[in-house]
Length: 276
Image 1 (cartoon, helix red, strand yellow):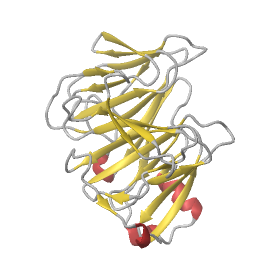
Image 2 (cartoon, helix red, strand yellow):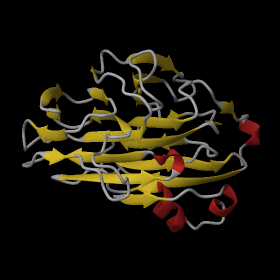
Image 3 (spheres, one colour):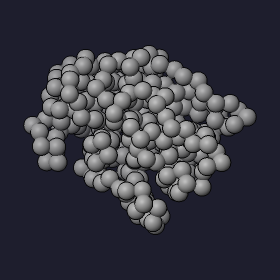
């Protein structure tokens, strides 16, 4: 489990490119037959990936968490972006096709992942946040996700927001999670941009080929920085930071949030002329 510490914005604006990448970019999310996790001090969110190929992988609590099992005091959101897979929760199996998801409530002791086909392994993307109450575990297909259509071709940001872990779909303590798809020939997300001091966020970018990149913008609105992101890499976004991106082609990304509330549109919008 890697660690990402919290940083004051006055310090971040003095970071070099490499320092920004070391502190905010999660370079390796999916590793064959491993569960790779990153523990963020911002709202104590854990993000990562489970990629079972030949093995069945178990989600275990590390020393950092100080508990007997991973979901003893946490909740979990999962979205599969790979081949067909299976999640095993306390001996009950759930099949997840590509872009199917799950909400797993606090108190689930056994969490395991396996692939249906080793030649086309599942890639389970995970977001977890501290929880104070047990809500029911829910399987959420892409079709069941709440859909919000935003943007336009004129602004190059036509997209569909698929809300998986969200009050309109299922109950959770603080985790909110979903998947946004940009239409072909559209490349911008979350622009005009915003901040939300009450929630942090993690972005996973995918559906990019090897020669395509996303420029993820972060920082205070008057002190912006960028991170060049490749396929299946993630970015940790502190609550004080903008979080917007533009790609060399259209792409898909998963967003996960945790903090003071679950109000998706609780945003502090930034006028375009205020960006620096």
